[in-house]
Length: 207
Image (cartoon, rainbow, N blue to C red):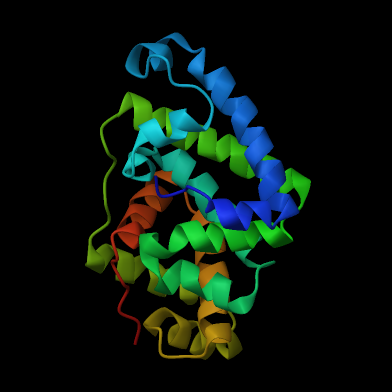
């Protein structure tokens, strides 16, 4: 599953340990839901997360991805610069390690919100609803340019370097946090397709 926390990282981070305990409880409760029990009979705890499959995140609805944008922005802002930058440069392959590292600097309230979101991801992976719309590269570019245009001129050069992945890790991190925060501010019907495009590696063309 895209959102699986590496076990080694979980053992070395109190935030990850709290996350693991919360997820165990939430997964046990999720397993009791009739629709989940019918689709994943006999699965409980973290085994239920594994049963959701690697594509589960792609099945989350627009509101869920808007929530994920907000969580990314808040969590990445507290993370080490390189980890923060990897959320944008590394794509889905970088997420498990980046997520585990981010938990090191996350408070209990944010950890609980992540656990709630991940429960929704697992539910989507088990129930397999139709995947939502994906923004085209042109739509992605237009949206990001529009969002960047709302920022002060002094920030735009940094944001452009971060978007193009040509700047420093600090530039990319600043862009990553700003992008996810701005995505979260959009209506869910717009944020969802844009986030799916990002997950599929669509990179906006910023001039």
